[in-house]
Image (cartoon, rainbow, N blue to C red):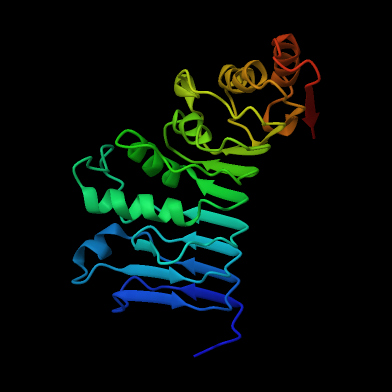
Length: 266
């Protein structure tokens, strides 16, 4: 009914009775969906919520919706940027959230990832990365061949998710990371390969109070990235006592790329 609509913002309520919300537009270029994260409310719903997107000219997609089944009805070939924070209607309470035998759920997640696979710029939450990580243990993750810039925001999840996802981004050039919780000894372990095209890594917000964890994070990229040009972080994330320790340890780390700079910002 809106043949020239280019931007749409939707905020959903926990107790609304709309089962299927379908976005179908030949002109839409920007779509933002804010939902709720009350899993108990969703369990009480008689009809599962579904958001179906059919917008072939969409360039910007922003999703903050945990308790919805997402569906891409057309390949979003024009997509430039996505900002995703969703759990695909999976609960928080159990770690083994994605049942390998739940083929319909696996198909929903796989089809969604294929639908956005042409994107060039992505912001993704650790909740969404966790679900993708679970999927990767069941089947290969779709490749994001056009993705050149990625920001991952970590809150409380396991950190080995990141290298697994990076393997599906073969042409990534820029990576930004933000941490809200100290990952401890679990950070970035495993024999996973980094994208050979990676040039810039920026830690927007480091894990405070753990020099060892941060140095392990830095060494992972410095020692595995063949053409890395710059590794950037902020000294304000550390105390004055920690600053010289951080700088000394980073400068002592071996670098696979001889032209790589370590840049400390304030």
